[in-house]
Length: 378
Ligand SMILES: Cc1cc2nc3c(=O)[nH]c(=O)nc-3n(C[C@H](O)[C@H](O)[C@H](O)COP(=O)(O)OP(=O)(O)OC[C@H]3O[C@@H](n4cnc5c(N)ncnc54)[C@H](O)[C@@H]3O)c2cc1C
Image 1: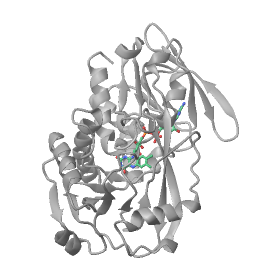
Image 2 (image 1 turned 90 degrees about the vertical axis):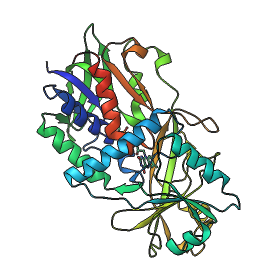
Image 3 (image 1 turned 120 degrees about the vertical axis):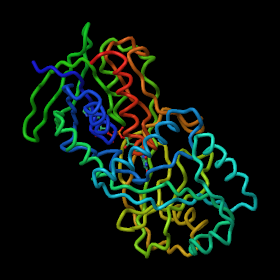
């Protein structure tokens, strides 16, 4: 039977960044990364805005704030070092209100999080810098950027494989059996034609299964039900815009306190192609189809800051689903990363609610987990 020091279930951006950080911290460790799909990053990690967030919105002292800000710096450094394409395009959070109060309180929150580079822009500055945007006030974040998330994940995988990572796509963890020391992990390997059972042992098991973390947690023998938080699925749809991109920066409305996302914003990929989204809709099932009848709702939201929008140039693009641990009209949940203390199971680490800014925070989530392991021995 194969034995590993660590087994990570889930090769999204977080599982990949975690494998990379573990192998940097523990160069002699044997690490197995399993992914149920034929390739890495097929779910939330490729259905996102690709924005490197500054860390403006999250409550001071939260894991989201800490890991976003540390992760942002680490991600820019990683991209420079390993030639992953990115651009610090900057972002404007805009307000249509006569009062700039909401922006001032966002700015105050950002300062408490340690962000000191924000600028308040009056209407005339917004008009000259972004002529297509209608807004009375704006908060400008120069450290916000966009990144090629696929190339980032590819780099993480290649660097980790060079350091000895065993990567197993088409391999699903079906149940987890804690032993006195470590785990037996039941897996199914599906090569597309037939299936095979596999049951390696690992000292540490890290549940990094994104939208399926809760489901996987339920298969862990003797795990108290109180260690599995509630799961809510919150879908976000995107629309492409086939017209010319009139924006130089990313344009975000003020977050609506009723909404579970940051509001339908403009974003762009590294080729400058413009898209709008995501909206936020709580759903019961994971279904990535985008309803074209949302076009009018998108057009109305976008016109509030981009009056020249031509609705017929909007076309349904793709969607992602946020794995939330808080429900509609509840306070947004933080990232939930639990270790052996919480579960009473030695060697077990679980991640729940890794929604935005999970891409930005991925490298610092890896460091955070390496510390959890570091306090014990691998
Ligand atoms: C609409 C949207 C927009 C976003 N925009 C941004 C953004 O601009 N910037 C930002 O920082 N963050 C953003 N995020 C958040 C970011 O996308 C996520 O935090 C991140 O992708 C989560 O990565 P993950 O590895 O935890 O999950 P995933 O990418 O979902 O990976 C989990 C993996 O686990 C695998 N898996 C599941 N069960 C098993 C099993 N039993 N055995 C083996 N494998 C299994 C799955 O197949 C999957 O590949 C956005 C999220 C959404 C939904």
